[in-house]
Image (cartoon, rainbow over all chains, first blue to last red; front, side, top):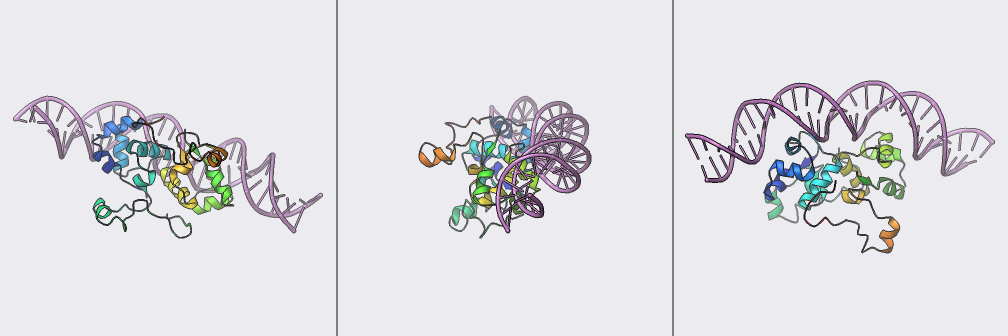
Amino acid sequence: MVQNRIAVFRVEKGLSRKDLAAAVNVNPQTIGFLERGTYTPSVELALKLAAVFRVPVEALFSLQSFPTLASQLTHPITAQKEQTHARHEPVER
Amino acid sequence: MVQNRIAVFRVEKGLSRKDLAAAVNVNPQTIGFLERGTYTPSVELALKLAAVFRVPVEALFSLQSFPTLASQLTHPITAQKEQTHARHEPVER
DNA sequence: TCATAATATTGTGTAAACACAACAAAATGT
DNA sequence: ACATTTTGTTGTGTTTACACAATATTATGA
């Protein structure tokens, strides 16, 4: 399962789903489906979304759950933004 | 169109497609299709591949063409690895 | 040279990512 | 209170990312 923070970044930017959809050339409902986690975008759409928010793809999408913004702001060391990879390289499913 | 450097990183790691496929739990031909650009992966698979190579997703996948390794190694400033985003945020199609 | 591994090619099938439409519900602003 | 925007829900259709199989071609190595 892929987690995402699209809604968080979108709201911070003051964009509606329609706005964001227009910015990345998809249907507005597609943004809704993504935000609700109904489906996982292609890396193409992911790159476009990350470009709109000017963040790395990993800040928007993750294989693990994101820390809450609260924990990320209060314990910036423990809740690292670019989660470091596992010891060797077994991929988490 | 999304460009990728899967083959480059795979070869550098001395992995066969079969190996890489096993590492990210997909069919070996899927890796072939990705490397030849026949299709664009989900961001989930992109994250897994990036994790295997321990690189950011943007180092593996790009909306623009990648600089050659040669230019990247000889002109490390001009041919930046994490291509900086456009001026405001119009997404490149 | 021969065997084996790696890659390419083609085909069939399925699930999921999209587009688009219609409408309902909720929120926001005047 | 009303109008408008935003979001949610459901449905239908198409495309494409995948799985899997079979076989051909090319490399690698003993």
